[in-house]
Amino acid sequence: MDRSTGLLVTARSLTRVVVTGELDVATAPRLAVLLAEPAAVEIDLAGVSFVDASGLTVLVAAREARGRDRLRLVTPSTAVTRILELSGELGAFSVWA
Image 1 (cartoon, helix red, strand yellow):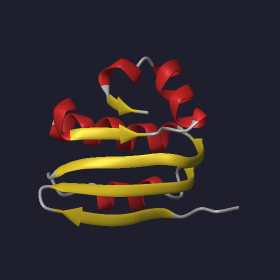
Image 2 (cartoon, rainbow, N blue to C red):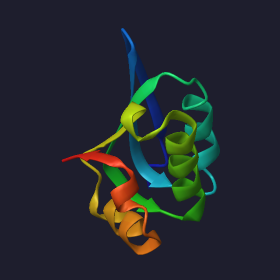
Image 3 (cartoon, helix red, strand yellow):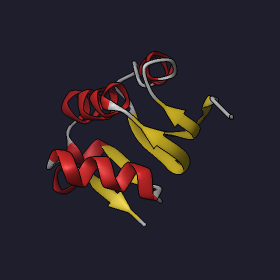
Image 4 (cartoon, rainbow, N blue to C red):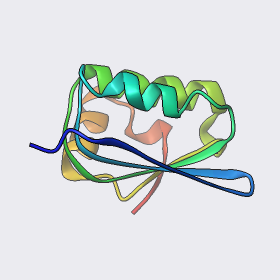
């Protein structure tokens, strides 16, 4: 099981974070550290196979810290889309398919 969370790439004023595997209680804190900087961020979630409430909390906190215009979710996997829909948060994010 791939539990990696993290490729961090910064270019100009946009930070890109690639998340793969499970985004859960074990990995969400690592993502939170990567998202600690207030820069605009793009999070590639195509490789995420599972998300729990801990992962959702990190994504929501990052959006609230930056605002919708400075946080972009890119190609969210089915697992990510499902938890965002079930929680009623999907429309609050800028999502790029």
